[in-house]
Image 1 (cartoon, rainbow, N blue to C red):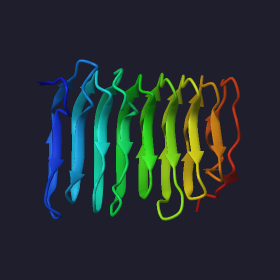
Image 2: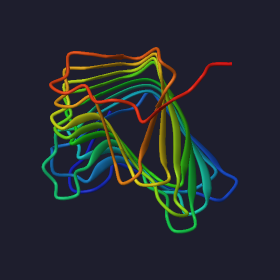
Image 3: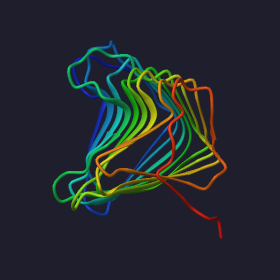
Image 4: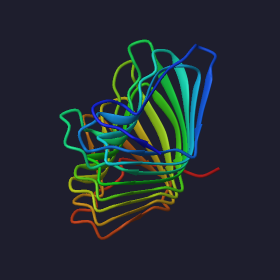
Amino acid sequence: GITVAGTHAINVNAGPNDVVSLRHIAIVGVNTNPGGIRFLAGNTLIVEDSSIEAVNTGISFEPNGDASLILRNLQIRSRGTHPEAVSGIQIKPGAAGSANIQAERLQISGSPIGILLQGPVNGTIRNSAVQSSTGYGVKALGSGLNPVDVHLEETSITDSAVAGIFSEGSESVLRLSGNTISGNAQGLLSTSGGRILSYGDNKVRGNLTDGTATGTLTKQ
């Protein structure tokens, strides 16, 4: 395992064709370090079968070019108090960057934002659980040349203090299928033209305010 304070535990700044794979690692912070894993450059980051806890941001993906993030079987418990604390997983490409995310079997708890998606980013998150966020479960911010278009499938988002799903901005699209969204202050929330599109098979129940999708999709 890696115990760290005052800095990111792992920084990735690789070549444009490099694939970096991290497996079977355990990162434990002291609630004051900025984060667990930070990616700045490379072709692909793969993180599997690992845990990150007591940090401010579990994984911060900030590519300066086109890059992919692949996540499988992760546990992230983020309860830090650092001023930069934002999320269990943060996707935030640089000015010339873009991101594709493929994630499954994530367990994220206790973050201000469970998963933060800032464009340009596309991809799929499936078979995961985001719980007890002190703000939002999944938050998408997309506008102008920085669109967000992400599928969320078979995932539970529960007990968020503000909203389970939040889509903000005219180029922000979240596509929902087979999810359970319950116990949040508000289930679905959109603003400033953000879209939440549902395939009609989600369970949005038991929130203080359930909210509604902005549109529907038909399965082929």
